Image (cartoon, rainbow, N blue to C red):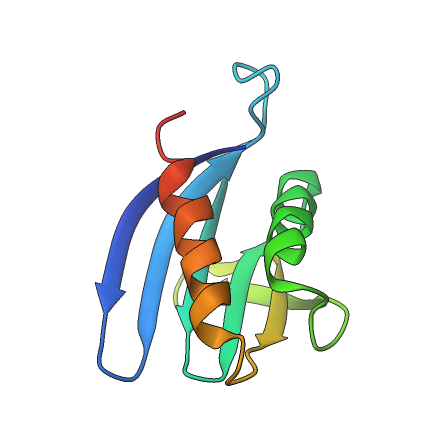
Length: 117
């Protein structure tokens, strides 16, 4: 999987990562999906299109973060004035205090290590 990070805002309490991901195989034909990860002290939230590329990205994150709290939830993405833009997955992972540091390091390695490859 190739990940291109567009923005990584690191706040004191909450950080947000915005980027794009696509499957490494057959890169010319692979679907590129935009994602937003919000990192809290005790939870990680993902918003990504409800598409095959989105499901693949969720599967890769699940390898790192473990099973999400609940199955991915489909929500409608709307923009004021533009109307409905598409279906999005909302996925939540809990971070336990004893594993949070290692889990976030693994996530950082995945996101930064995949950049531009």
